[in-house]
Length: 325
Ligand code: PEP
Ligand code: MG
Image 1: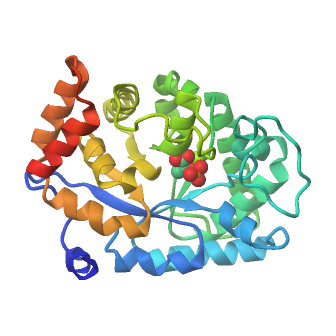
Image 2: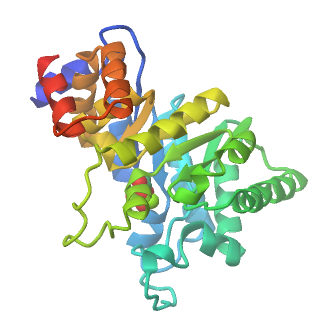
């Protein structure tokens, strides 16, 4: 199997009917970097910067952050890297930071909320990212944005740090794309405004589904109580990609759903053309895409979502389709 997947490494990732699907990998540590090339990925679609903060015994110094971000960009070379700013709090606690006991940590003081309330940390990180991106292209993405105003505030921090670096004679990135994750359902009802402001969005399906279904992703008693291949989820995902396409903004999905071949099939059938997945999933998902007829999958998906599906589940229908392909 592994050998079979390595043989696909240098093949362009296109479906049988010629639809290009870009597969990026999710990463967060130095040890992930060889996978950018050994999978043949299109780049890093989600770099989880909090991992550096979680593995250390104290807050990483800005020089350590800078060094990591430079190493990541060096390893990626011409391939794009999307750095997600710190997503700490909730279940991602830092052992050395004051812990706030929260009754609902997933809904609590985390990610961009913490970043905006304690901007010192976020500013320092953004400065390190901008310095690492000096002379090259840089992509920055914010986690857990729930209102457009939060995106504005976070983006203002980038502007402020750019001004600072310019005044101090640092080389600035040649181009900066700024985007947000879509993880909070409320943001879906602000897509029209949001898409005017962002360069790209990436669906964080792990958190988005947990909030859509009110099911704690970390609680095994409930975490599989919903089906990712069910109409409510697929309709939400379709709405996001359709709005993004209409606004000519780049849309990807970087949660676990993309790492499952049948999930990736559903996403291509919904119109997603960029997925970011774990490095280990890259081979199996690519094999599936090379075998897929995207137009047929899209037609099936429209039928399943727009006509009553009867007693057979969408998952079942998609599985049968994948097996027949
Ligand atoms: C997600 O929520 O889908 C996501 C990619 O972010 P994380 O899993 O790091 O919360
Ligand atoms: Mg998330």
